[in-house]
Image 1 (cartoon, helix red, strand yellow):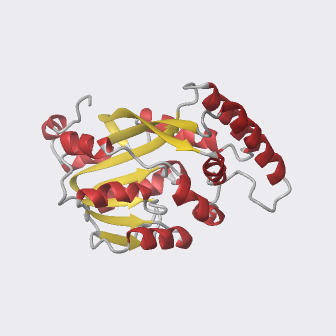
Image 2: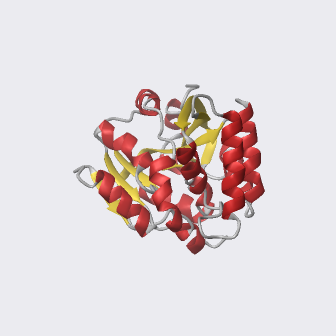
Image 3: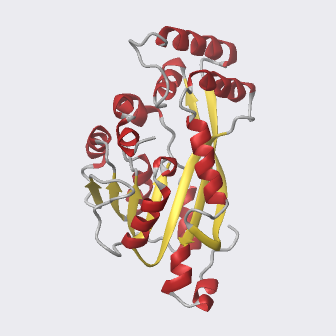
Length: 277
């Protein structure tokens, strides 16, 4: 899929995205602080920052955050929500061309965004902007599809409308990360998982569905069918007027392979490997 489409595909979703997408557990910060040395003085380049949901974690901790986002509408929401934070720097850029200075970031992060990046040029760009000893942290809120009948049926509902196989693309990116063949050196990656959830009434659930880039929007021919199917699912699964959307927040952290091959000695690299979290 052309990169230009990737940067604009959520333009019509902005009203739904910030309101309905899940936030990230505060425990993410604790993990990064304990295992990777994140501090309030760390400089974070948050790539594909969108409306600032991922950046908020680091802003609240006190980090200087360069929120790199190519979509003007999403940057505008981030500015409205977090623009009064002196530690936020909004940047019009992409994963492949951030516009940031060389060796300027202690951490490069991507929340719910890595699967939209072109791996080879973004890897080169992350290598350029990371400081020595810098870390890459990738994280997703992954729907726990087997958690409940509602989660199973909601996933089946989405597949009816996912014409561009978004889930397949996301799974391929995640598997590439897990296989360590895209970014990370051998044994330089670990994974941690944290339960997460949202509680929705029907309007909230509808907004959550509409935040997905492949779902039919109001005014399109498929929209009435989609809304009716979602209403039927909600009515059948709701308890006391709400449903629970359950996730696993997956966090992947590691060093770039080139760092371990060329930036430091093998012994130093081995000493700095992340342990099991």
